[in-house]
Amino acid sequence: MLGKFFLILFYLVFSFNLFSQKSNFEKAGDIIQITLPATAFTSQLFLDKEDSEAITFVKSMGASFIVTHTIKRVVNKERPNGGDFSFPSGHTSAAFTGAAFIDYKYGLKYGLPAYIFAAFVGWSRVYAKKHDYIDVLGGIIVGVGCVELFTSKTKNYSLNFSYNSQPNIVFSVFLD
Image (cartoon, rainbow, N blue to C red; front, side, top):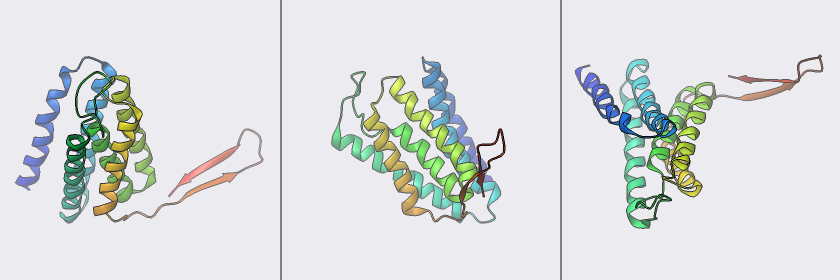
């Protein structure tokens, strides 16, 4: 249990560096790119009876980090603001690793909002002129791909659309 406490503390300590950013959108994206993976990880620590799923998340996140930063060094694409190592977006890959893990473990009911937040992270990186859309797409592919590689879906879900001809009701969506 003490090890779990120190891992959570580790995430919190590094998140304090995020408040030095200039743009509110960029700051929000930075916070979310830490919060999504932290949520995925801590949910496994506290909601799962076994630590094996937390280890699976660490493998997915570690692979995402290694793949992202290896590609950055190999490609060495210039950022829109003139900096180095633009492709793929590390913030986006981290956010989508967390979002995909949440989706795989808890289903679309929780995964869809996580994906929306992760998409905001990608948009915030483009808005801040740190990346272009290709960099963000690369981050999405790396993040989701690493979760796909290490994680099995435990929550089967379905997305059902139904149409009702009653006035004021066009359709409804059910997430199981």
